[in-house]
Image (cartoon, helix red, strand yellow):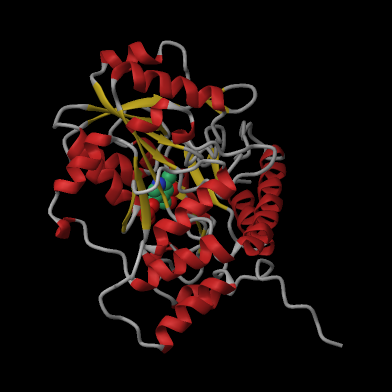
Length: 394
Ligand SMILES: Cc1ncc(COP(=O)(O)O)c(C=O)c1O
């Protein structure tokens, strides 16, 4: 009898991961489990693998050429409409290598040194570093914990951003690291402030395909007139596990930004490779069954982490993410102490989490007692991670 194919999410080949070029495992001691950087321990969808192999077999590594519209742009436009109910305006999307580059380009073209750039904090650390390095002021919109989970103060938002001289707003939704999927009302409060203050908005929606029911991703540019001041940035890299390939899309709804980009020298930004484009198109067009199975595994893991956190001997006040495969853990009351729990756990538990302090660097927000857990791994590996952490802190 033919056996059904093995569940690609049930086992993780740690030897394959350690032998590869990925920083998540490659940079660690051989006794340490990687649960930090936002790559998944799984493989890629079959269509992505086949597409990459076909290019390789053809030895098709010359400079890219497409006879018509860039297929990545077409796949992006189709996907946004089909999956997220947002119809991007044709002709406004362009490809970049990555989202960090899109942020950097926007900071450069939409703001001046000394201007304020608002962003929810804790935030993806390279964004904070990049804004600070460009000499702009980070204006934190602190994520705070209420009874029902993480949120931010929408009341008085416009006044606060005006006082702090904001020119640009970064809306990362789903939010990294809290995993919040913002509601239409929350997004509307941000849109209102942006309109009132004439802000340029970067809507980073890189985790949009990783949202758990009943939560639903609402593209910022689908909210109405705010689309004309929004650059939506996304890629297939998080949901389909191809971050190392480097391909992203920016839908530039903002006219002045578009003009600035059109005037910029063509060769300033570089171009994504053929491999990354082929993989992105295969992911967005032919990998939804894989994504559905992945989401079921991630959801199970998410629930496991929630149960584990509820049983911890200190009050972790943990809120499960509504999207992403990232858990934002508070070690304040734990024996790991209120500072650098990730470092402590790497030493004592041989588990590498992401250091919480990094997610608020260059701001006055204090996240030193936090660490971020990446639970995109097999259930057995996750159980080992959680067990090691509990044992180290017993
Ligand atoms: C919210 C967010 N934005 C951007 C990125 C990075 O994207 P890229 O590798 O395309 O720069 C990440 C990576 O984890 C992320 O979580």
